[in-house]
Image (tube, rainbow over all chains, first blue to last red; front, side):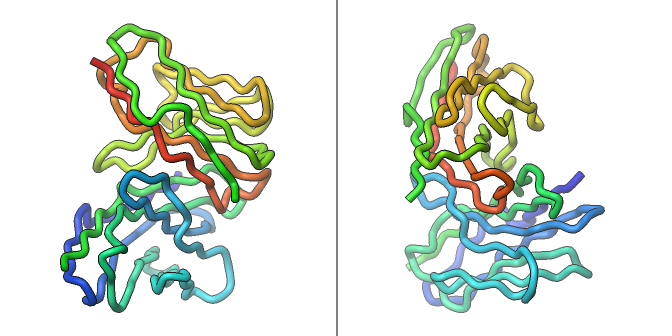
Length: 113
Length: 113
């Protein structure tokens, strides 16, 4: 069975500073990887995904994540955060044979002015 | 844009009551899901459905049932609500074999007193 670990439950960071949200997964089969974001009082929405090809994937709002198969990681990074990035971030995994999506416990990112 | 609508944003119920949570999607998606979201635990899958009148248990189905009589509507039923079912409930949908992008509703915060 797949599982997802997000070691940091809360990450406070000053505005314009860089941030990394860590995600590790365990799976005996090939997987697809995702980051979802939940802004305050909203539902989750897909931020970025890795299905195949380049191991570095980017979102439209400046986040990027790199799939590292040897370390079974999919860390999310942004070189300079904004107040509007304050949200809950969930890493998720799905078998490439298609199946339900398994979510991690989430990381709460708080951007401090 | 896909819209997934959950009928109530907040619900307060008493222990032992039968509770219905309704979810409607407007994009003709075959797959629909019910998750519960709890702090530190992330999202956990309760039930999902691949088609009308079809349902599959997720990771935590105990104490819940579901109904899918029409393609656009997926109902979650708490037969006899208990305090440990106090949680945020999220509905999601995807097209057939396109699980890589879940479309989420904004959630129902259920409090069982």
